[in-house]
Amino acid sequence: MIGVNSIHSSGRNRSRSLCSVRSGRDSRDTDPFRYPRTPRSRSLKPLAFPDLLGKTQDAHQHRQNRKKKTLYSSIKNEKLQWTIDEEDLRTSFGELEGGGAQQNDGEIYKSGFLVRKVHADPDGKRTPRGKRGWKSFYATLKGLVLYLQKDEFRVDRDLSEDDVKNSVSVHHSLAMRAADYSKRPNVFYLRTADWRVFLLQAPSAEQMQSWITRINVVAAMFSAPPFPAAIGSQKRFSRPLLPGSLTKLTQEEQVKCHEGRFRSVSSELAELSSEPDRKVKGRELEEHKLRQEYLEFEKTRYGTYAMLLRARLASGDEDLSAFEARLFDDGGLQRAHSSPTLPLEPEKKSRGNKTSRSLKVSSCSSAEAGRKKNGEKPQEEVA
Image (cartoon, rainbow, N blue to C red; front, side):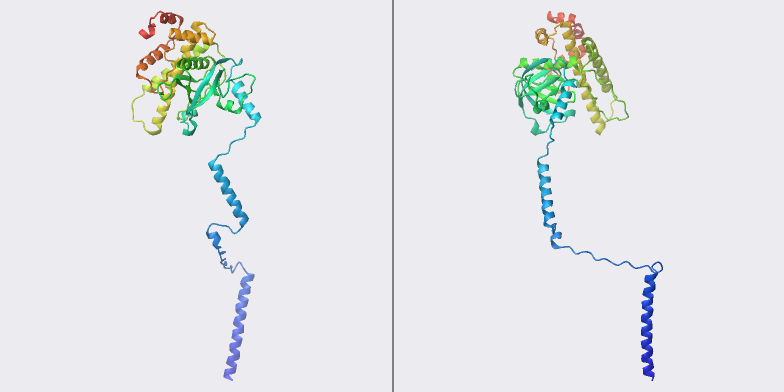
C-alpha cells in the first residue's frame, strides 16, 4: 500500500507542477508589463560564396554594374564636352562684340599673320604642357578685340565657334617685346586684363613693333577707367576687376586719367617698398610678392598708355599708320614694349628707368618732340 500511494502521490505532484509551469507561462504572456519578454536572437543570413568574392548572384545587376564601371572609366579618360547651342553662341558673341569690348564703328586697326602660343591662363596660372603649342592664325585687330582666324577676316562672313573661342579682348592689355625669349625671332608678349599671357610671333621685326604699338594705342584710347577698389575685411590680395566697356572720356581726359593712375600706382609701390624689414614667411610673403608684381605691371601699363596718348595728341595724327611712322622716325617709343615683371636685358634697364621717371611728369609733349627731332635730350631726363 505504501508503494502504491507513493506512486500515486508522485504522479499528482508531477501533474500539479506541470500545471503550475503552464499557468506561470500563461500569466507572463497575459501580463507583459510585469514579466517582460526576453528578446530572441536572430540568426544572420549565411553569405553565399560569390558574395565573398565581390560578385552578385543576380546576373542582370552584375551587367548593370559592369556597364556603370565602363561608363565611369570612359568619362574619366575622356571628359564630356558641353554642347553649345546656337542661341548661346550668338549671346556670347554679342557680349564679346556689343557688350563693350568692341568699338561702335568696328574699325579695323591692323591685320596680318601671327603665330600664337598660350603661355598663361587667367590669373597668371601656367598653361598645361599639352596646350602650349604654336598655331598660325590670321589676326585682325577690330576695335578692342583681336580675332585669330584660320582664314582672312571678312565682314560678310559670320564668325564660327572657333573664331569666338580664339578671340582675345585687348582692353587694359599690354603688348611688350619678349626680350627673354630666344627660341623664335620677332616674338612679343600680350598680357590681357585677366592676366592671360600669349606669345605672338610676327613675320618681321617691323611687323612685331607695329603690332605692339597698335595694340597698346587702341587699349590706351578705349579702355574705361577701372572700378573703385572694393572695401572689405579680407586681407588676402586679389587683383581688381577691370571693365570691358568703352570709355566715355575724351582723349584729353583719358590721358589725364592714365597719368593719375600712374602716379597713384607709383606711390603705392613706393609705400610697399619702404615698409620696415621684418621676417615675413608663408602666405604673407606670397601675398607681398603678388601685390608688388601687380603694382609694377600696372605702373608700366599706365605709363605706356600715357606716353602713347600724349605723343598722339601732340602729333595731331588721327590715322594710326601716320602716327606709327612718326614715332619710328622720331625714335619716340622709349621702350613701350618692356615689362619689369619679366627678365630684362641688362643694357636696356637704364633706359627703362628713364622712361618711368619721365612719365611721372606729362611726357612726350610737343616741345619735347621737337627737342628729340633735333637730337637734344629732354629736360626731365637730363635732370
